[in-house]
Length: 323
Length: 174
Image (cartoon, rainbow over all chains, first blue to last red; front, side, top):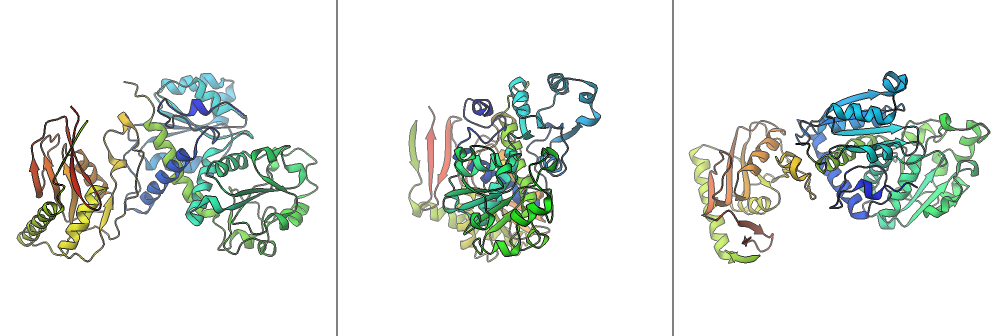
């Protein structure tokens, strides 16, 4: 794991960059959730915008494709009245051979205040944070297999809205944990917020070795794993990252690990079902489950805007002014 | 830091609140305001608004405004650590609003509150009612209803403690 906890906080322990859940305490995660709750109310008003970050420039720096994360970050920044620049790596100077550091320096020279970075390599956001000017803040929007902390926080907000008290919860994470930066951040956040039990359910080939060291119980059988759980997080099968031979077929995966109405009966009657998207219907879960009233998948998307507003506002508020 | 408690006598504050309520009634009659909506500013303003709401026998629910997202010191001190959700249960379009706060000092909170309010709609009229009005205005803002007026030096800071019982506390920084 990367040593990022000091880098993320200023001398007063306030958020400067947001790179990983690691090194952030329960009080700070709770502050993010509380602030997000206040921002969620903005979406219900006539004017869905607050003037907090008026005059700030936020850059979406995406070296890897994304729709949901990029658009919700963009919407979050715009609801804070910041100006947003979308920098697409496939059509940018990076494709012409510019280094990450040169890209950063060039954008800093344009007086941008925040970079939201997604990159296929673990540690990319951390690299930016280490080299960023004191008046620039870096948010991690997903780096390789390492972390996707804003996704984890929007999941925590969704769970808290349905279940209130984390300390009594049993949460199951099903699927491709091997390639999932989302799962890693979720496990860290759930442990920091103090849930009673975290279970991971997956075929052996899709579980990282020594995952137990993160404080989870490992199950290789879906029916056993989801017995009496309060929250079920279904992960996407990351076909684009998957080496040949990890799974016999998608059909067989669904037969053994796909979430169906029938299997769901093992969980608590009020269990909620979450998925970070994009959904592979008929692979990770059935359409019936995805569209059921226990599915909170679309609420996760709305909560994503509120959580990202909170994190952008907290981090931008703690950067040093240039003048 | 000196901590001098003033007007901690609940009956004295009750008398001030009754006077404010009477003055509000008079203003409403003069300006022909019917069915005003009460909106309190977090946190002290809400405590005062609750009491005025009761005294004026307003049946519609009280609105609560948090002005953290509208403050003008964000670039200096960042986001306030304790932001509470604003909640205006009733549409404010074309309504007469009584905006309530505990202490009026620089006027910056009221500027922020007015901006916040207008993002919910376009009220017909806004009245400002404040429990304690002190010197030190930095913006052209004046109250319509004043509970009590007080002259303080710049190093003195007046705040309301509550909710039960309410008491005005004077912190002396020197």
